[in-house]
Length: 223
Image 1 (cartoon, rainbow, N blue to C red):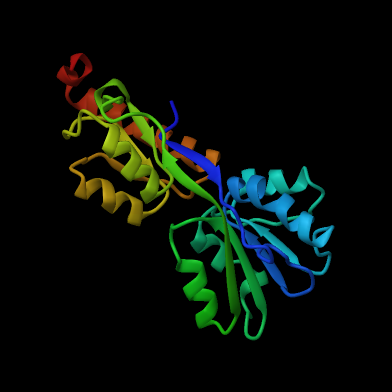
Image 2: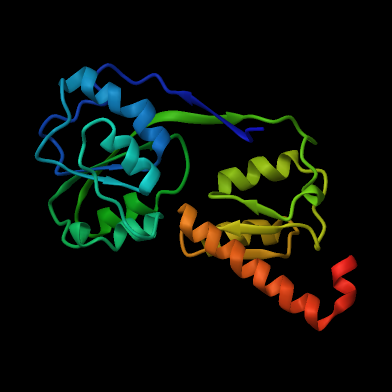
């Protein structure tokens, strides 16, 4: 049951052309590749060979690799991980293009501009409502994995149960965790990134903690 539906955005006639204008092109999600890459090809004929191509994570990188682009990605699959990459350590006077969706964080835009880069952004998709309101009872789940504040907002708009003692909410950053704390959920676990391996490791930590708590208080096993 999708919480968020993805739809392409109509670009202006000259929007999406990359050519030799950019030194670095950063795709902020796999949706950005699916909805943005072909439009770059439509305008330029091919992806610019001289530009460094960065993907936010392994899934996004795989989408680019399947299209013949040798993209690189950080181990920490977040904006913070991209900013820590050595390829972006000296951005003064370099031209950077961000390809993403409508809305969302502007951390990369602001941080790269502060380093002296000339930053542009094209928005190639938008997020819309998926599941109807009241469609999700959080009490039915042991774990909920949410990768962004937008995903958290969509979840809470459709959730019928918000009390403490519900599922452990796995989030990729303290920022997303604060959103859920503000929404009244208490079991927030910050993973070491947004990738599958980091999420699985966070779930394992939760399971280990629950086992320790159950041994300390046997009555919890039947609760």
